[in-house]
Amino acid sequence: MSKPATVLDSVLDAVGNTPLIRLDRIAEHEGLKCNLLGKLEYTSAGGSVKDRIAKRMVEIAEQEGKLIPGQSVVIEPTSGNTGIGLAMACAVKGYSVIITMPKKMSLEKEAALRALGAEVVRTPNEAAWDAPESHIGVAQRLQREIPGGIILDQYRNVNNPLAHELTTAPEIVAAVISTPSTSIHPSSGKVDVFVASAGTGGTVSGVAKGIKRTHNPDCVVVGVDPVGSILAVPASLNETGKGCSYVVEGIGYDFIPDVLTREPSIIDSWMKTNDTEAFSAVQLLMRHEGMLVGGSSGSALAGGLAWLRSESGREIAQTPGKNVVILLPDGLRNYIGKDWFLDMALRQEPSPLARRIAEVLDRPANEDNAKPCL
Image 1 (cartoon, rainbow, N blue to C red):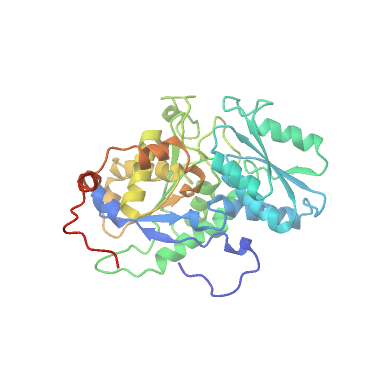
Image 2: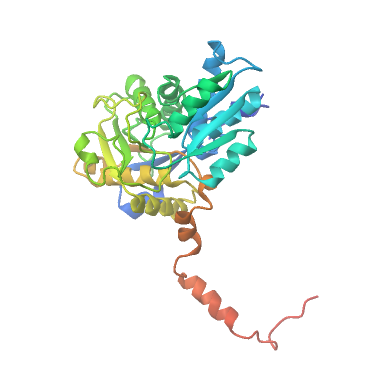
């Protein structure tokens, strides 16, 4: 990743410009011949892909006169990452922030939000999106009753997908076309496939438009939706496990956000993933690539690998030089206390090396061979 060697004016200038990294060890593990590439968004200043939309929504609202210094209170319903991005931006710009967030979301997210000066209101997990007690309903009530309250509204704000069309997509394209094709790493010189998990849908919609409109209209875009959500198309994909709860945070909904473009000309295919598949893919990224990612990154990778194994993706999977980009939305910071991660990191069966360590340390030290400390 090439960044300008200059002093930045604020942390907001460190949003985006994230690296595109080869996932060669996973590709080999999965028997893929294509180039598998990960867009690592946790290197952005606030730790996630949502920094991009938070920055743009705040800056455009200021330009349009919707945010007034000393008066406006930014209120946002969120799964956490958009809230962190907004709290970061508002800390720099001097706005008060209220974040409404379901109880399912991690304590680490709440702690980060409060550290940045935001007020946090938790809402019931089981509340439907349009219920008064949901994180959206509570935000709307607070906006009505708190002077200066404004909801930037990531679910409807056109600057959500625009942030990705204008920044994320060009970064991906620039990285791919500027990397020469070699005998070791042949390249088509194009983004052939783009895969992203969907929450509001702004990321997958915006990047899809940016790639297809300016770079490769034949790029295959794959949206990934968790089992229990209703975002995937056709609707029949959502029937299995419809309405069930899932542990992965920040993706999937029980309604269709306005910023999600589901036309087949934009998003070509949808894959459904479950928690087990997501967290297994997280472990692949950690153990094979050294990437400390969150659960939605695992969902994206699991969905992408499933598509590459499918009839639709098999040819691309086995074609050297095809470039398949997986967007990895956030890092481990937000989930380090969650059971799924603790199970993975601390509660698994001991490895052969761990058993060998235990055997060595269980024996009394041989004092005859021990070297004295000097």
